[in-house]
Image (cartoon, rainbow, N blue to C red):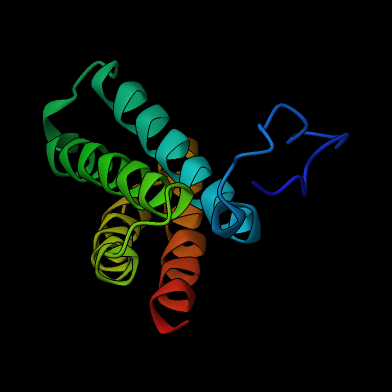
Length: 130
């Protein structure tokens, strides 16, 4: 197969030469979606650890859902799935909802999560339109 990354250096040097070329072309999307998932996981975990997590229940639930959706979208792109556009559209909607909820909370982790979700939603809409 292709050897586009043979002898590659940098953060993607560990990718095998057989790594799908579509994934290589979409690494920025995969990175944005993965960063969003990480921010969502961190947000949910931090909110769960609060002295009073119950008022954060909606934030926690949406952050967990968003993390799962972002991971699914990134994985679909990485393997060149035929349903990428469908998943990207759904991911944008979940990211928008999570961003809106997290933006309601003044905590640092919620604000960081909201920003990561906005970036990911934008990337998802671009992926769905491509």
